[in-house]
View (cartoon, rainbow, N blue to C red):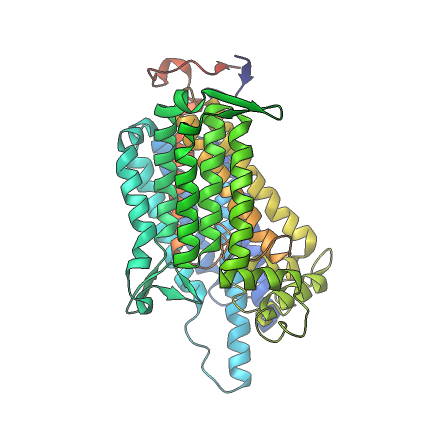
Length: 466
């Protein structure tokens, strides 16, 4: 195998601390700018907010120093920057809602930013807990089938509950009791990625066996198609039963890519693409809510849809056009005209007030997260870690692509959130857990060779110290 030059043996926690400081300064400047746009003065409580946010960031940094000292120094600062920017944007939309409510002598309701801050604290606490409890990512391989049961159970749970306790905006993907609501599919995604990694490590030799050669592509044996067909069928069931287009696409896409990484056979990608096209065409014609989303995507400005079904997408597109290259400035636009601007359409909020340049900057941060995650997967010497790191990173990348693609009308809307940025505790907590797993894999990949845990199946990658 070819050698890969990696910065093995360097802790670089001081670099991480410097990047966290830079991120904190940017977030505080953005917070001040958004608040000043409404009051023309420095926001009250700025010092307290600054101390609180910096303290949270430092606690996470100290936990990494203690439990994952060799982890990649870019992953945590990137997540903090995204989470902080999300808090700023949600706070900015809260201010707009308060202004509109005051103008109409109405109550603005509960602000979303303070609740998102609470979820941030919970997410960072779980991030630290995962790092403290899971000292070796390979231990998760022994939980392969337990993760399968947990993941599938969480996926189907909303479908088993009454609609009054599971349906929000037409999607049956929630658990709601009283004032509490949670989306179990976010945690199920991570559990299933652990299952996929463990299953494919044990079955990859069988799945890599060649079958017939057709049109220049070596196809797998018919008897080995079972896992793909099961994943395809499960994704269609999620789509039809729970009206969750985003989770269905994410679930199937992650499995196919991890299958390809495990076997290195392009035929699996081809089969996955064919099944995806067939499933998409079938859903577009026979599943009512998918058919409606396709029509909205094709005709967002049609008089038939714009006053109702496509209103959200149309307003989002108008806002992005208003933002132009450099945006209107934080607090200077009207992203509040877009329904659910702090969740499904937070990408539109960024594009309107920070412009195309701001949206590209956010995507670059996401690119760093995904690239560093893949780099950690490549550097890990055990096959389970490689597959798990690749699955976590690709799942993150696919979710970003699907969400931004829907907002910009590249693809139909799916209802997925933007990791770390969108309002919602389920998504935020699950992404902090995902980050902790990537940090753990990165720590294992960058440890100096004498201290690195040696897996029984180490054989794939040569690591050269510098």
